[in-house]
Length: 175
Image: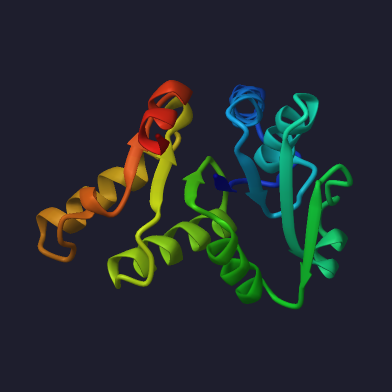
């Protein structure tokens, strides 16, 4: 199974999140799942990729070459696909993944998350989407989504994505 990880590439990511991302990568490798990610070598992406690679797992990085001007790219990927744009990158994520994990991140991660849940809502895919709510990182966003639902702007968002607070719970949703 190919599991896409959306998450921060920031060098400022706190250790509590990096440690959990590394453990996630270890578990992906243990399960023989392939990590599909933005190809970054730092932040949540880099930590998860290190966990995969340290345990002889497989990874597929997908990024435009110019992104290397903003963050270092992972050189240990089993495979790397270079694309021309961020839109093409997101399309390749969808084409090459069986499920999506949304780990803590910034604006780019939110962009990826909202696009993938919108596409699921519009029945463009039926792949599992799991928000990995490490250390309550996404509580505020989830509260906002609940409020949107309560006020009639959303319908049955619980059917579109799931929320996991730990790795075991996350893998229960994947399996």
